Image 1 (cartoon, rainbow, N blue to C red):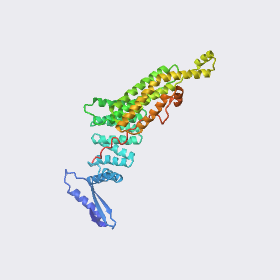
Image 2: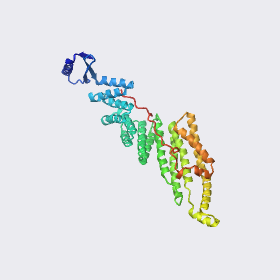
Image 3: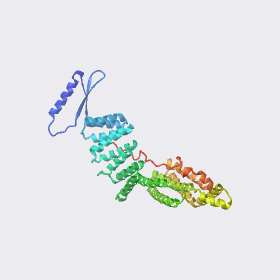
Image 4: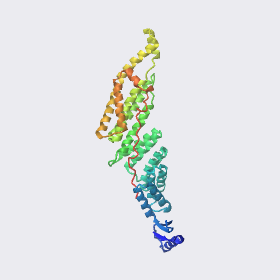
Length: 404
């Protein structure tokens, strides 16, 4: 730090710069130096000497003390005033981290994107790629997030566990876009990477997530398949049952990974599958129009009376035959709650499992007539009962450490 009268400060700075240039020897690269003249409270001028290294270190100090706005300004200064310095990549990445802490996801995404554009071949670009995809997801730009992760899986220095994470998160972005076919392929690719791995996987979060969301793609297809009383009900029920088994098998694989979060979520959805099929079957009540007319003339009853009697008999028989679905659903929810209590897991999935368990027991104890009244219109599930699609916690995994 050099103090000089205001009248001579600018000239002194310029002279010092010329001397440094004149004294420089060929083939020696020096860290660029910037001189900043500042006027003090007593009217004197202070000249601060800054290098890329000192500015970067000051930014790191600010970031470590959670002074995120100051850290961001200093990291940006490294990028703009010391362009081409060895600190550029790290300054862009850490500036993105500071933006995240400030809730400025769009600004964070821009910095991570610059890292990928300029330094993609380097290993540190992998960290930036994951942060960019997360920032784009925060902005609900799932298409951009999917593109970023698709590019990231081509990185030559990507580790297998990171490739599983990238494919699982790419599948999730596509799932949120409603492109279940492409999402299914991404999830299967994540599982294929794991199958081919020769080393043990360090973490199971994204592996379980891939199994879970792969099951969820089949679950969504199961819900969309119609089940309407009539001549087509047999083929419709067969198609719906096959889709149920596809979802069931994959939820069970997610549970087998034993990640507490995804095991609880998959257990809930597995129980919901059986409950949803029960609801769909009970709601697909035939009108018995033609049959009611025939029986009405024989029994000397009105058509409405005959239709109600036929519906009652039909419901009793149907309820008797499909009660095993309720028993199976109850067993799944019981195991899910028991597992959660055993590992000390609390949260939305456990709460909803307990709630559904109470409802199913009430439904099982009800008469067929009462059971049909307990069902919502057209066999749909109310929003408060509908199994919510899980969201991977934003804090898992933790953001990569700042590159210092």
